[in-house]
Length: 415
Length: 85
Image 1 (cartoon, chains in turn yellow, orange):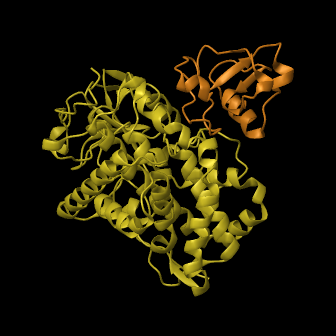
Image 2: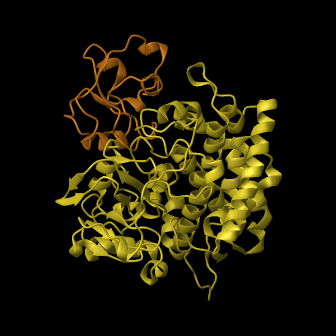
Image 3: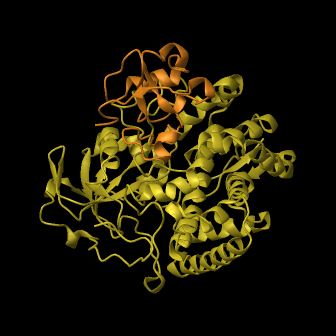
């Protein structure tokens, strides 16, 4: 049954976690506990590990973890199918992000199944369309140049704090219509919310974000402007204004979805560039191919996962899944599926264009995909103009974070 | 494609939002219009069309790559049976 987005209630789906909660229909030979985002092999070299899963694991297996048990889909074609059939694989209740049960809200539009999600997407999609984001290009370029002015002459930087995180936050604040002096605070909140080692820090970050976004929404309700917060606050699809809960759930979701994923993608890409100077030269020599280059980098360095829940029993590749089971499309592994992308770990800017899964697919295909592509393109072009040769600082140890957004913690660079 | 998507025209999915990355806005341009609309506008469009779920014909295009102008007022396109499997 479709949920009522204006009147959110916490879901009461059962959640299986741990070895003693494996449903009886799961065949023992498909049960694994591989530490998909937490294990030592993952943390040592996460993308190589994801690529290797095609050789070490069956295409569909049931992963058992204290964070939750779920079927894992590794194949590109299986993920396309699952993500394009919401009547089988639903988004309702599939976003495990904790919320206050006494002030519950839905993350909009990610938790709303089609066709209802379209009502929300139509409010913002024109701004985030390829045509819409083109208008932002000059502004993004100025933000990138401004950041580079601060450190390009220093001969060294810690990439994530100097560029990888602040650039997307500057752009996000511009688009949302929020003040630039919130930049460092937003970075801190996003990092605490998604990567803090303890739940208290996470909860504190969520409380700060909630208070700030609520006051920003109130302000934009009173004083409309061109920004996205204002646009959502004043939206009235089919003449019906959105409720307070819908507005908050939408704005809050954009914060969660739009920051950390872009940070991590940029941090991954720049680390690889720093380790592959010949490929940097190739990129500099092929300015006309920048879009294909960015697409291939996104394929290889994608950072996140798509979770869904079975709305009905379904058999895939002979594996019987039951209504209520959870699945995870392991997008970084799908992008290394050798049947979809021959010689998958080679980064080849001349690959024929094919659907990559960096931004997932289906009705919930990332609304910020074109913006993310543009940020990476512009961020890369401006960086290479100023810092065409750079390397990882000798002796630096690259550590990856455990968790559902794959990227290095710090990337110390020198030039 | 955007015109179809925002107005609930069924049969065009356009799931990537016009980014030339999914081939779910495949359409067949009516014979009377093919000369004016032209063929695929880039190698990437041609490569993505190769992966379209329905039969690909000489008049196939990804509709996100057809920019609507006054020049194309009255354009007739037909939609394939499916945009994906």
